[in-house]
Image (cartoon, rainbow, N blue to C red; front, top):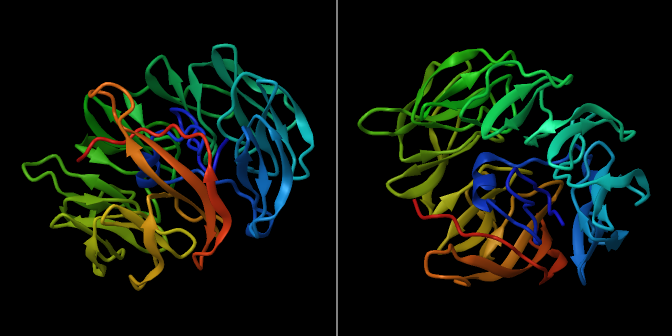
Length: 365
């Protein structure tokens, strides 16, 4: 089952929530449905369905696994095979694929058949035959695929546009994609040409015309560059994330706050962690508890949850739970909790309940 997010390594959801914190930092992959049409995954007794933004069941919980809607369709698992349903719950593409982690984006969906990934159209026909080791959704006419352990860039015909990189981001934004080569990061354009030199220690993807970058000098501080590679906010932060709704999280003296695009501090660094705004609210952590603030820095949802995802289409995923050491001492702790949804006033429209969870705690900074 999926609650709003999927990613390369596993299904980020109450059932298989992997690399959760990375997704919060790097952004989320939400469907393009209108708020009034948005449906949200829920599950009970090992079956999943969908609710609307009021918390009313819109599609019965009859599927083995579910993903989010995008472009009017959502992947679901039936008899261990994957197909796609419409917003009435009817199968539009019969369950025939071995895996699907995303729904449609720009008219195509990545699916796995056997060991390889390819892309289908809304009728279920392969447009790009399965030949990649992994395939991500399209953005700006391009998609990131795995060729062995390398990251390649393809167009909608499946043609690789450049030699694969050691690593990369997972989607283009503002016409650029972050890429890694020989331990350094830079940016390429839609043709795969390097347009911002590959010399940064780390980078985050572009958003609202700016990207957070960690400069490769003796200080290793974060600043922001524009699409030409020009530094527009000087390196001065211990950490920084992408801009959303005109604000970006930054770390100053081991506390997090928010700056605007001029680099001015708008929300003072008083939080243990902050994440980019969505739907007018920012996800923050204080004393190991998650809550939400508005653009003035005031709490709208008090910090009482043990994990949360950012808001999407007026709802956010929230959880009560705890980290547990289940394996040997060298194994990372796993999270065990109860998950639900809240609205922007903090009301629980779907009360947190027991769901199967697989979430690995990230290493400390």
